[in-house]
Length: 155
Length: 336
Image (cartoon, rainbow over the protein chains, first blue to last red):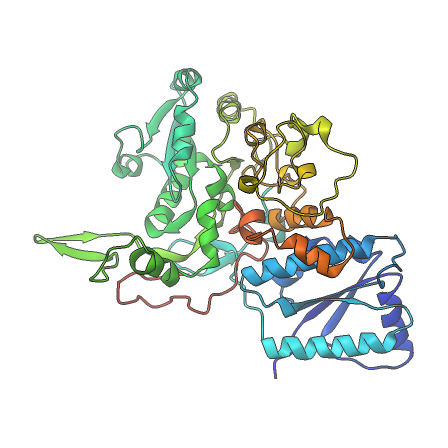
């Protein structure tokens, strides 16, 4: 069975605390998810999402505080706007919109973390692996792309 | 002392970069005084065999414009790399993929079918496709093969410097040539243009409000544009905040929003993601339905945010379901 890799980027104040709660409450959810903590969902630069996909993630979940509850007042709204546009752009690039998901989860909703993680794993499992072409130099003679190092990005 | 030898070549591009060199006007005389142009097929009568006859690294610098799509372009890029000490990616297409790079949204088969069969203006009743080899009056004529993916120059061969722009502005071209002649070069891999955003040199900078909030994105051809006010403040999709300066903002001066041909500044890894981020953040609404409505006027997100940089994007491209791996009937083999 295909085991997708899912990157979850959670805000420090709500969703990460909820994941913590899920942990201490011994709620289990699929191990396909790797959580990264950021101070605010508004800190999630769209580059992070693309980078996760480019480095092998099959799905990305963003988690932030409920509307009106952002620790930094409006960070989650900025995330919402970027997320809506990002989904449209991914779709145009041939990447299923459901590989990216945004959820508002408060610190009290450990069960919600469990539910979202489980759903997301199933959704992405059904979609299958995200296959991207390697952006690499193609050496003369062979046509096997040589991966470009992460630092090899143009200045 | 003999003058340093310089070469120019074009790959998948429109010819505008060659035009940019001609547009140097009198400055071209200054350039010619300092260097010997030994290869420039567009303007002077040199052949590939002339380059092949050179010693390796015989040319001091070679400027290559255009993205890489065909086997001929790939071979020439490799040849130019071998024969010159410095290789400069000249213009948006060789720097980031450029307009031809948007072809990466489709596979080769789709593109060929559109160009030779389906486009309303095509008159091709026999369904003739370009052939890799054709017999004609006892001769075998050949064409280069096309690859499935458009690549930047540095995804093909090692590149020393980048001259951005569509086409690169003449002041930057002259500055680059002077820097090379004088041996006064920044570290390898540098983009030879100022490393600040376009807004910094924009004439409308003073009219930019402290906080730009946009209810509805407008399209330039459907809008009466105020000739003084910051274009973003008018709801036009201007890529100024995420694009490199150095061009003098001629588009903005002509009432057209910046489309980002100069590419990103050095701190940005993915131009499109940053542009998307900047634009989305300005939407003046917290309501999902209202945000969706505001986004409806961005009809082509990839074409807007990755207009010149799709092949250089972090995602590069999805492996296309129809990727051609075996030579098809027409004899064109996709090779990546």
